[in-house]
Image (cartoon, rainbow, N blue to C red; front, top):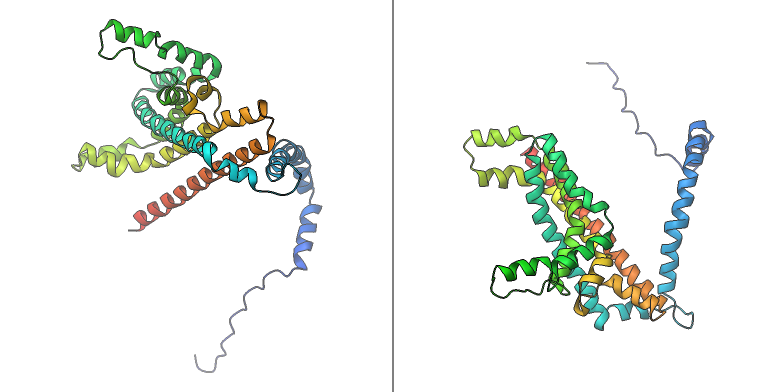
Length: 311
């Protein structure tokens, strides 16, 4: 309108100056609920500092200390060459094989259980989970009895006159993978079952009603919905298997020595705490790498779903 004066746009609010931030912090600490929350959190913080942060920090310092007390990276170089490097690669390989086998078996089992009625599904899941509460030592010796040269499985195969029986099922990589898979399988089934149970079956029925085949429904609808559970279960099994000790030590041979067994040998037999600390820090870094990979895959999946929703 003619003769009217346009009001200037309001200036954007200035970011809080450094002088205002301490005031906000002081006001926050003066709040009674904030002080009460910090007071309640103090035991947890102290617990984490004493039992988690301090041991990890001490292990890191020990791995960087030479025999003369000076700073050195010798123990890390020693852990990443020669026989120690082969043991580390063996650990990574067995962990990957265990994760893959657990995902395959767990996917089939969880997919079948998720289609059952809640009562039967609960009973089957009880059968899957209950062995996990039995001592790992007892379960490992149970597998030794089953897989031994004169064990139950080989005796049955021999009685059936299967060519090649008895088979070497123990004290090799096959035996280690079977034992570790039996330990990791409940985690996989529980994670996948929770994801599959939450899938809306009407989506699958709608796709079938529009003429999509079973393979297309599985590839385009079912698998993308289950993919986050597969990633979580795979990374969890891999991380847990990295530091697993009991089953590989009892069911494997010299060529299946894993990092946890090497750490035990260096501490108990060689009294080499520095080298064992370096191996422990390497396992910790591998665990962090697995968690970072999980986070990246989750972010990539979210971005892919957002692009699919907007397109």
